[in-house]
Image 1 (spheres, rainbow, N blue to C red):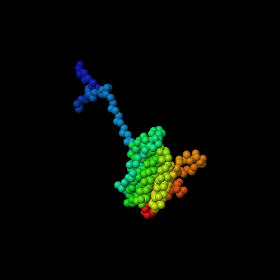
Image 2: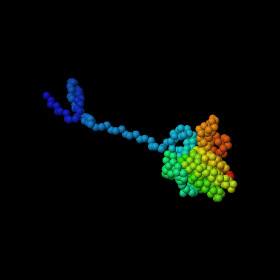
Image 3: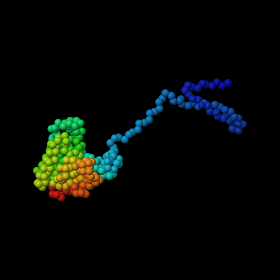
Image 4: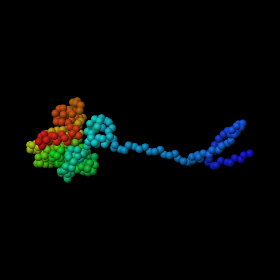
Length: 319
């Protein structure tokens, strides 16, 4: 009797039955011969399955949704077009510093009155103290107040330029905003420079400064009247939004008034106007297209063409 060797531990033994024949030319007889085949040991039951590979998400900030058409836009493509939607031409917000870089020749801007800083003359407080709000806005935006003024070159033409920024308390006009704009106008008059003011203010007079804020509307308007009497050129550029006391004073006093496409321009919001006069308002009556049709502005200019249009206007007016 054949003695079989016991299988090795943890080894699976498989018996394969084969048919054994006789030599060539002889009579065949059938028989079985067990053949043992060793395989790999089975995996241990204590081993854990490999964890699935983590999915790589899309980094934040690569895409943005257009407020005009609702399309999802590649942010870098929009930035290359000066923050304009490549699908529908909607003009997104840009900061005052970005507007200066887009409008003026590189390296020519020199800021004026950058040391002027707002104070809290009334000790005003709403949800937080006005003094605390100013400090928080300055840290968040990197600006002293809601306007940047100075001088620079547009296609090699020296100009005086001011830009308001809606990111700083909605671009509302406090004492510092009015003072910087008034000084800008006076320097343009003294230097016989063309004056360019780009308005991006969703707020009017800054309520935190009360009557001192309201005075800035008259102060800047008076400076512009003297600039006009001296033969100076003032080009006002209205962007989205231009509202309140800014629209009711210096923003609407330009010798030439340009506006970006589909900009919101007006004094009060449509709901406030409708509630006051109780009349159904025309659709889109505060857009730049509606205002152009009714003679309030002179031309709608896309952001990419603004620099060339201003340079052409300065040459035409002999500025």
